[in-house]
Length: 303
Image (cartoon, rainbow, N blue to C red; front, side, top):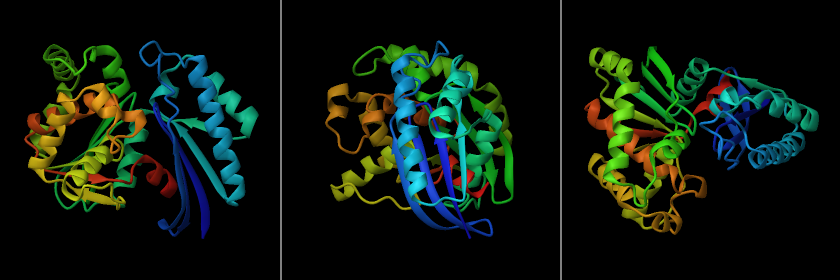
């Protein structure tokens, strides 16, 4: 039995998970924490981590380092994704973290990120038919066509929620023109995705954590009128999900601000995430949608 700490250092959120692993299986989650660092805020499209974001990142990892020491961890693995792999001062951040905490961050490319996401998702969801896994990050979105036998095709695209929001979301609530601009951009960027999808014909869309956790929370608030504890997975009612997405797209910033089901880091980015989800469901004629609470960090644990 090994006690492993995995850190997923994303564009918006830094995740820490500590678990006991035995023979390639997660036996027990000891601790899970996240800090909404917004590493890409103010610089996601210019390729720079701003001074304020740099300090928030260092502070978060210092806190995580203390937690890891307190929990007597055998192995620590930290990976950086879109924001760190594209930022010109990403290497400077990695060096600053090492000096302050001793932690070594590995930058992974989009292909490796997608593979780790698949590894995490398959622990939470039955991949018993042709499926499309989608992980909406702040800087990138990973798409993985897969079934129980493994990955058929995967690719990471630089169309994360923070990037799309900074590029196209300029109205409150989001305007029809802003939506059309995003759709036109997606049409241009995702052409090879559609080509593969026309052959593979996925029936199920599996949303990997993030925005899909918010969609699930909003759906459950409608039925139970309270925020439930989230299990490893969640099956969406298609009609209810479409209604939730429409309500998000129609909402103002102030309305989202007061909605307890939407995390503070997602109050605005959830809008473009909802539009992207709606776009994929419609374009690929998806029949059912699921949430996998497990994502990259759980894949990293097993790795």
